[in-house]
Length: 367
Image (cartoon, rainbow, N blue to C red; front, side, top):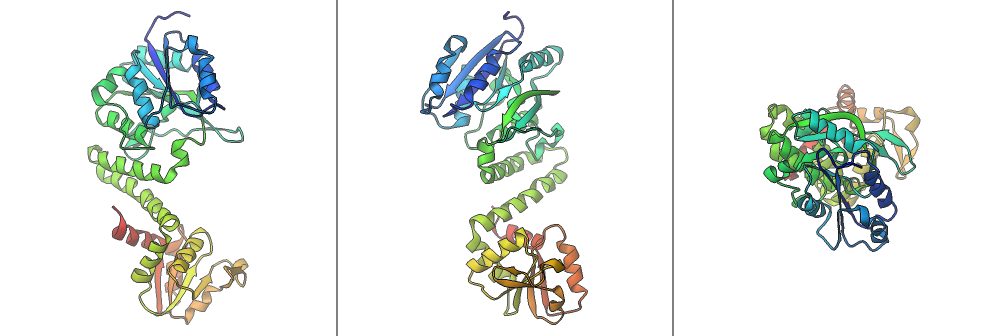
């Protein structure tokens, strides 16, 4: 196959990928575009990955297998070795469409651009294919708006603006793309499936860390956004929920003490209104804080007189004469329920929604 046109370096980083890496390698070697430099950086795999790679050594331009400091460190090693005009990165559990590189090369040749990205197809554990949603590139200020397996970048962009930031362990690809975008790198979108992505990668396995890192990254760059005030709200609101939810799962005792000290300020009864996911979370943290006398209520008649944690779920009408702290543990309709309970005219009810708790917790504990 001829070597004319832009030279494109493809980097694959791997570690213990024996089940998937052969498909990745073959997807690169079978590209319809000829001028490709293929680089594989392996992290000293011990599961047979190296034996598979060695089958293709005659067609791989650079290969090393040695201990490293993680996925982004390995990617940076690959970028340093790349000699192509353009660099693409495909991980060892993903693979390219047959004409992906040819389509990408044509975009670079026909347009005055420095970064091209396309679409990806996501593959579930049971083999189902789900098209990854498209996000306008302007939304990159508050989310990862482009799928990294589909991204190709001119080598000179890495030379000018740097490589992956090792301070981030899961979301460094987002930081790098946002760094490029904020520095006015010329992005171009190709409306075509470029790569296939298997669910279960590092960012999906470590969702909590990924959420925290992406929040920090967005906040680092938001002041450069032309609509910074609006973007700040978009960045903070979902992360507040993530932060609050993670606190219930990770710091239950702290959340329970927070409720006991900041919300439940006297000896009134404790009522958890709603026995869904947030009701379960509230009960768990209150129990960890040593609060045992808890009532459950719900608006659904089908749930009345059923048991939840060994206690009967009561009709909300019980609140007409009860002195109680009511935790409205329903995320979507919390304000509506609060208005419903206020309309009972009982001044002995102290009502607080999950959304209000989230804001109180964020104010007290967020970094």
